[in-house]
Image (cartoon, rainbow, N blue to C red; front, side):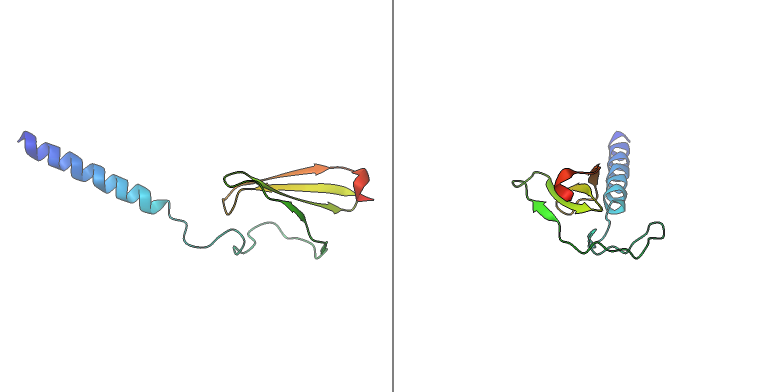
Amino acid sequence: MRFTRARAALAALALLAAITLTGCNYGSDNKTSEPFKDAPRSHVNNGSPMDVVRGSDGFTNVGTKCDHGNRLYVAYHGDSAYAAIAVAPQDPTCR
């Protein structure tokens, strides 16, 4: 009977692991092709390109640009689901 309980416990653990691993699959889409799912936005477009500072492999990249006198910084790591945004208000280099 002890052997049967061990098998049942192992089967339950394998099922739980399978559900957990497949539940974390977000598909093959990446964040650059994901449609906007945010609040309504205006049609103002600052079409100037960002200056991109690429970190070494495994490190975060940074994009920066000026918008209405403010310097914007966007830090991202490859195609990961996270990023960081910072603003330097009235940056003198943005005049």
